[in-house]
Length: 254
Image (spheres, rainbow, N blue to C red):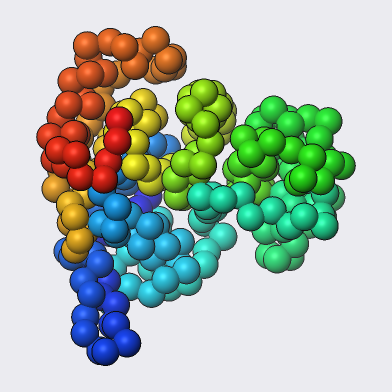
């Protein structure tokens, strides 16, 4: 599904000095897989996601999605950002439809898909509401529905629940797994939370401090469907400890 080979990203400061954000990143993601990426602040996680999304240019290396190179935004990809970034003057349904409108998709088909997605994310009955009428967690659900409305193959998520309180975040993790189980999109989710990375993933990609390199890819052999009681199990704790060993107390929390 996704093939990243020898990916590098270098920024230049105003003084012309290079900042090495990513170094020799190699990653394969299979169709239908749920992959989480965890690492300390500034390690290049979001840079990696933006390059995959076609928002940011790579310095060197290659990225293939279903065998085709990514050279810019693609209909194969859906993106959920840290903040939902909803348009306040548009209704919830109209916000979900933004990608379909940009891509010139059939209005009737897209509206039916949008309404189905709103039901899937638990927002049936909110289609004609406005963003200010929804809680933070509900707004992020709208962001997920919007990312899926054009039926992408691959969903990229950049710390989508980082701004939510702990209880809402746990509930959103459960709901995200339900959504993933319903449509089996390929997902890559960026997070600072080791526990979240373990709870959601089939595999965890662990990144080093800048320049970001992949230091380990961990297969998570925990049963699905998952529930919050699992977080207290010994097997879950072993994965958390294994990831945490890469960082100590550097910018990553459990």
